[in-house]
Length: 247
Image (tube, rainbow, N blue to C red; front, side, top):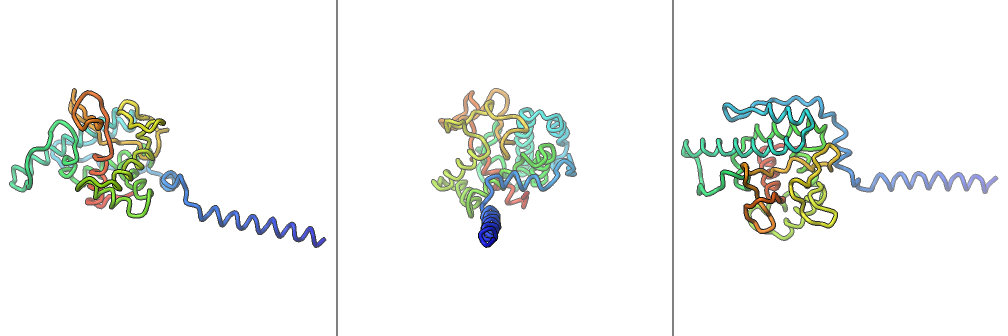
């Protein structure tokens, strides 16, 4: 009788301790779990832009149809277009500070500081809505913050000047969102997974150049192969922080 009671007690203690241990373990799928707590499909999104004459109807339609690759390119096209229009407005109004040496045919780090907060928010919310929380700049921002304490601030410090720690965290972020091959090489744009089954934060890429031009991180030059990296993504995350946009 006593032996049976001891066995029952041991089973109960083991179960309680197992539950406590599992509850203290950080979830490897925390981004997925958090995203699933909200139904983003009912998210209200305005299609208006802060730039007169522009709106996000075409992007909305592509996302609604699940045309992820086309939507990614449309996202980059709109960001480049609106950024350049806003930059020219600032120059005309005499508010521009800095040299006017940035490229106008590709999204680069300097491009994103001209994007109105309203437009960044609209793009992010459209991706959130039609992927139901799987894709979006704010999803990427959250994944970056999960890598380690103060990872986001370290990452953003890499925008000012090269920072080895920021570079390593950036590459960890790229791996987590599926931008590396199994052999640990950076994917080219065409090799990404343009599907709702892609890893959380896989899209959008903020990778865009005008027709016939693309950027290669392999030798930091503009050429035909579309290879991209986390620097553009860092510039977007920085813009999200400035605009106060978070998931």
